[in-house]
Amino acid sequence: MDKLLIEGGTALRGEVAISGAKNAALPLLCAALLTSEPLTLNNVPDLNDIGTMLKLLAQMGVKIARDGSSVRLEALVIDNPVAAYEMVKTMRASILVLGPLVARVGEARVSLPGGCAIGARPVDLHIKGLQAMGTEVSVEHGYVHAKSPKLKGAKLFTDIVTVTGTENLMMAACLAAGETVIENAAREPEVVDLANCLVAMGAQISGAGTDVIRIHGVARLHGATHRIMPDRIETGTYLCAAAATGGDIRLTGTSASYLDLVVDKLMDAGCEIESSRDAIRLKAPPRLTAVSLRTAPYPAFPTDMQAQFMAINTIANGTAVIRETIFENRFMHAVELIRLGADIKIDGNTAVVRGSDRLQGATVMATDLRASASLVVAGLVAQGETLIDRIYHLDRGYEHLDQKLTALGARVRRVR
Image 1 (cartoon, helix red, strand yellow):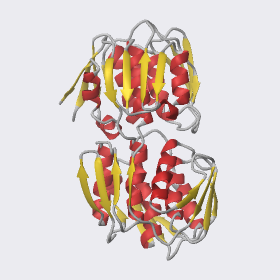
Image 2 (cartoon, one colour; image 1 turned 30 degrees about the vertical axis):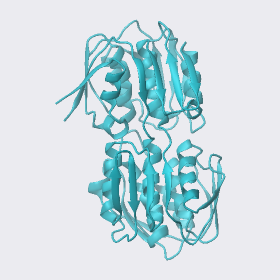
Image 3 (tube, one colour; image 1 turned 45 degrees about the horizontal axis):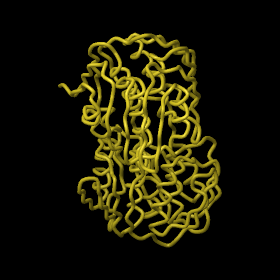
Image 4 (cartoon, helix red, strand yellow; image 1 turned 90 degrees about the vertical axis):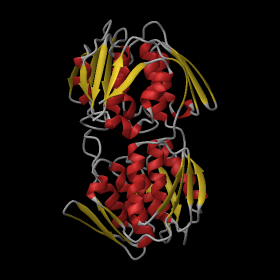
């Protein structure tokens, strides 16, 4: 199993390109199930989760051709509407095949998904929404069994904001008879990106990016070509890495418009940030100022950036209070940061981080995707060597992380 060895103490400098968004690419790949015509996606990142999803779709009968960051999918015949446990145990996004399969072929058998151990992310909202649209659903032996001769439009309300739930139901509604209204819908840019692609395929969708999405079902969708949006979490992670190390970097192929609160918090920490339509430059101060934050659904501060900000607060001047309101187990990285010398106290969903003059390298273990990123950020600034174990989490969500960091001057390498 690969590990990541980091020799800290080098300020990141230079320019690096941001990849396509993992959290946008996964539902977009599933959208190919909605049509018998080819769907071509550009700017697809090279990630383990993407590879897993492509294998899953291929097992269902989707023909796939990949050329660099371009993927062509053709679901002319779906002869195996099953997502087996062996394929989806490491990836929660597998549940996104449920809605498209029921809408297109009238049935699906999908294993309850796995993924990061950051807390309960139940699929009951997906199931309730499909049931309201006329689907018979049962959960047996770890699998969701769904069957519907023809979906019907319905008014859906989700008790909590759910990104994958919104995406699943929106895709299903595209081929349902009549109008579907999703209230309390997720507003994330990745939801908007999916909606834009579905509209290009012939769907009738309005309200994406607000908390009420309306979908008028159509008889069929056609093929399309779509470019996936840049990864805003990868963008924010590199900005945090540069901020922590006192660096000066320019990120291309991305936009600050997806990261308003993250950029604001980095500026509160003392960073200078310049942004254009497709690039961001950050110049860090000699020492950061601690910044407090509270995670909440978009457009509030993203939970996927909480761990990275905890890392930069460990070496900032002052004390920060971090409140996590999305996932109940998302402070597991704190214990590993403490191994590097961080001063962190946890009380329920609140972490108090007191900045110290320096961190010291040590062996640490990644517990989930974004926790892995926080350990990388801390390792880049820690004195000595930091060895990060279980970096398969990183490979699920960051394209060529070690290569990109090396291009920015970091001393990083993979070891067996």
